[in-house]
Amino acid sequence: MNSQIDITAAVRSFARTIPGEGLAFLNNAAEKVHLSLRRIPYNDATRASEAAIRWRRTASQIIADGYVYSGKSCTDEVIAYIAVCCVRGYQARFVKLASGSFVHSVAEVRLDNDWYIVDVSAGRGAVKGEYSPGVERDGSLLWKKGRDAWDVGLTGINSTMDGMTIS
Image: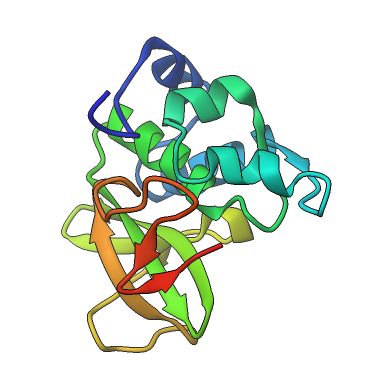
């Protein structure tokens, strides 16, 4: 696979369960992805298991596995969300944010001629706008945008963000 958001039969099937068009679809898809994934506690007992999958699963794998780790779910949820949006023909991109040592993933989706930010793991609906380099928004700065986490250089637990190791 070349991308985490490759469209598979599993992704298509999941996307077919989401109603709506336009903004309603963007919000319904975010809710469906968020609520469909079981939360496994992230703690000392699960740390190694989470590290083994961080930034490595595809949308198809995330949907099939049906789980994410609490507090470490944003990238997986955004990857599944972007793939679902792509099935429905919406242009979407992966956005990685940084705020001090805290990092977070959101999606930006194009609807008509506007971009909308969707914070899937926070359970927030689509908000008109996009992240721009050097401009703080909601306490965070844009690190990189791309097709998916792999496209911005995040491929596993030892990946770095401009010299900052994320663990």
